[in-house]
Image: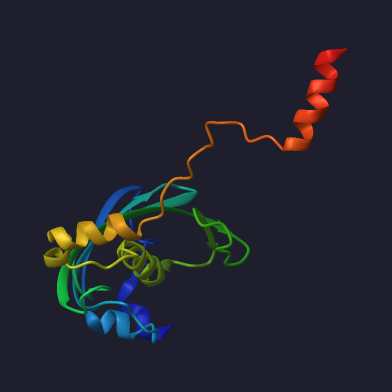
Length: 176
């Protein structure tokens, strides 16, 4: 965890109230996670607002910036603006527990909280699933391809299709 030390927020010496922290993250930050990424050359600003209460902490994490992506259709490199935010409540307990995505429990003896994983997740979740370059998006051919290969809605049958065997039974019923 020492490699993430730059992303610790020490809260023990802070007064109750709101405190701002700012980080600029780039490729070196993402290299700390040793995972394969879908983007490169990130230039991201992270604004963290810590609202310290006597019994818990509230973190508001706001990320915005640009990343380079590879278009899924044309394989062209393009720049994508990203923006996302996250609110996390940190409470004190016996041991660390992050099983609830909105509430993290940290040991009472802790005096700082590391936001690196939260920032990483917030950035990764802001990357679009379908990466389409603006040059492709603005192209009429792309629109035609979307129309051609997009799933069509299922049309409901307007006429009742009846099995001919039921027709014979229906006639018998109507005669009685």
